Length: 155
Length: 360
Image (tube, rainbow over all chains, first blue to last red; front, side, top):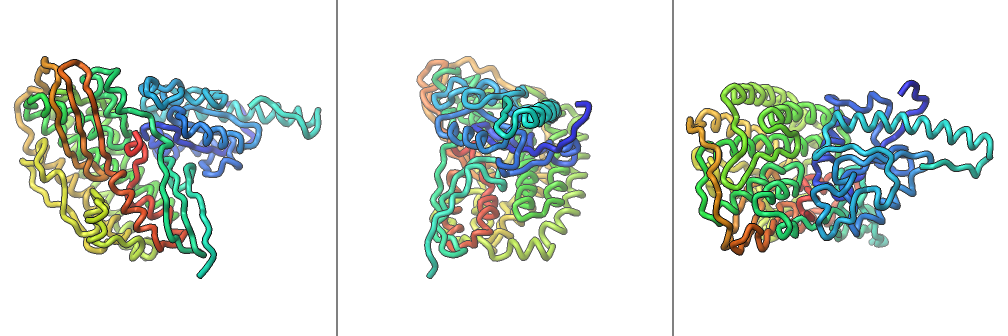
């Protein structure tokens, strides 16, 4: 993360986690861990968000919600799966209502392991997401300059 | 009379980290009716009893919820222990009590922070969560985890808390008590906070009783009931009285929970002082469970009921959990009737909703 020219905003959604990762995500934003020093800010509005933090696996009822939140986010965007449930389904993988990790419905860029994921690991994931977002927005800008309005980049 | 319309609340909403959906029928700015719909976090955790044996299920039961994780694991283990007629060593009972009360402190501080965030007091939110980190450090030191502890097993506990750690827990709770007293001045006596909480979301004693509410939500409506008085774990050796308030509003709920933190700190102190010198932590469980049992545990959010049924094999037939938030939802819908639209977020928070418990 050499240079960051934009401050990405962060959207958090609880897929079907046990809450452990959610409170760790919130703990990351509070003064002790203070992820906001990395230039991000937590928002509740998907239309203003650049980084999507998802905790917990995907079930039959929330898959449409997750897909919709992802689609509402403007390009470029980065998705971070926090916790082992969001990565693979985790301990609930064998449950009848769990379809799998977050990547069953949306493309995931960064996987943060842990049950529950530790704040240090989440911050590490956010740092990687900020760097990836910077890279993608540069690419996005370049394509827009070259190809006009209709250009779109991955993610 | 204004025109009626329906406003959706959630599942993704800034006021809550968890997904819950309410259809709010509003007339002008007043809520006429609230219809909850749940299921966004449903995993089907109870069905895992057929795939994991009863010892491993202790870790699955713990993952019902990341906030009251310790008590879920404990409730399940005690239910199975009682079903099998296993007597847990006394030291394990005291250790479970200490960890339970530490979980209560961390859960209530988390809630106070979320409440402050709910009415827009960011600074207070950060202060509560800063204090909470101290208790999380203690939990991490004694168990190894911040959210999921995995120290319960059927028959006792897996880890001991040595004397030097008990001493540092005592130091930490003394610090927390002092810091909380500073925050409490703003939280309970500040004009802005009071104007937002007093008289909002009234649930009378009769309503609270009839709708079957539990925990601090019920005690804030003046009903004196606490499952800890039932005397499981080390609670028969400790001296305490349930905390109640007769105001029945959001302020009373805030007040009750704040005083419960001090009570929990006091209970930890008592438990440390009366800690038995026996060193046994667990008994060997060799039988296979059969029969059935109900267990009731007082969680930070209220009474949780566990039911297990064994069939004489390593796998249980059924595990059922009734969680406190589920019991409090009818009470919430009652308080929402007639509330201002702007207060909805706040009212949802005052029952301390734990959606992942409720939906499992």
